[in-house]
Picture 1 (tube, rainbow, N blue to C red):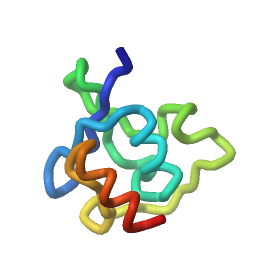
Picture 2 (picture 1 turned 90 degrees about the horizontal axis):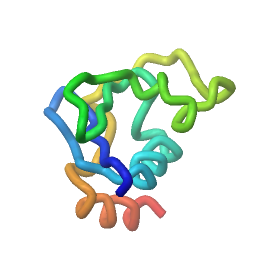
Picture 3 (picture 1 turned 60 degrees about the vertical axis):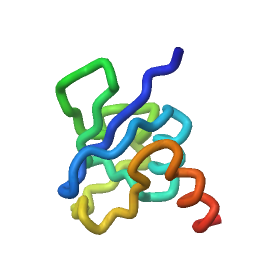
Picture 4 (picture 1 turned 120 degrees about the vertical axis):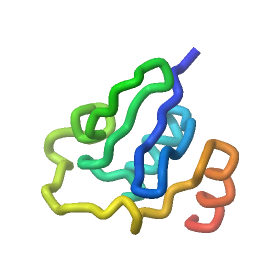
Length: 87
């Protein structure tokens, strides 16, 4: 079974997200390299940019991000409506 992921924002913890949903959030620019994420089976947070599968080195930027300005769904079920609204 694929591990699910959580994203830490100033508003709290968001998720869980499947790897596919997390990648889509990255592709849409809603998860930035500086944002803390963790797998559901881990307790420590790691910057999303540490994962080359999410952010290949050539795509990583250095612009700062404010977690409160990033529009993230709260959990997997919410992601369907967020994606539908941004298509």
